[in-house]
Image 1 (cartoon, protein in one colour):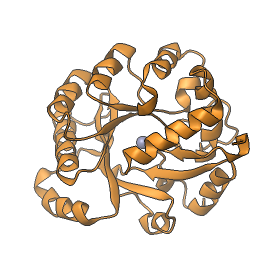
Image 2 (cartoon, helix red, strand yellow):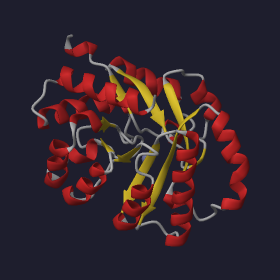
Image 3 (cartoon, helix red, strand yellow):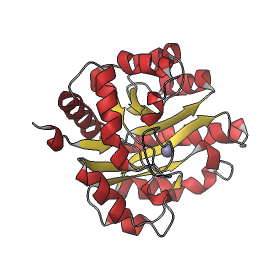
Length: 255
Ligand SMILES: [Zn+2]
């Protein structure tokens, strides 16, 4: 395999959150040019926005989720219909969901939304996308109760290696974005080396988390090629071997 044939899966990108004048088709075409050919788009207020446009592309997988930042209006009583729909829908994963101590939303609200989504992931057999900034002990307790019943990924995780170790012991996958490549993120770089290779995913979280090397003002999945090249270096692997492995991991996670 030559470098140009490296194939990548962006396991977390918000293709629905670009300004309207940016065509999703153009963003994914630019990504495909550098080998990024599969995408997972999580939900933050239910299903992703621009869902009709997204669904036109078979290489885009969709999720349903309520991000902690948007969990203020989450009401369990409204969710029965959603639960039925999710069982039948094209939704491939639940999330992103979890805790964010920076969100101006009461902890109780975040807790209710996260717990409901863990349970619906168990019920539907779909994987869970976890967004976690703070409240690590509570998240650990909830996910420990679900251990063996749901597979989950810590997306763009930014906690310590010690915290990550506890979640890895529960079977977590960990997904890394370009933010780990910032020079002062040596903790995260240690974490990149610590995660078992068969549980490591890569993502851009675009249009957010613009890597230092990326020229545009909005991040794009096309940046994943350089992110993967640098992560491969941290793992002392060839870019080809690394990309092959993380693609396999993503395909299995979303299978
Ligand atoms: Zn996200």
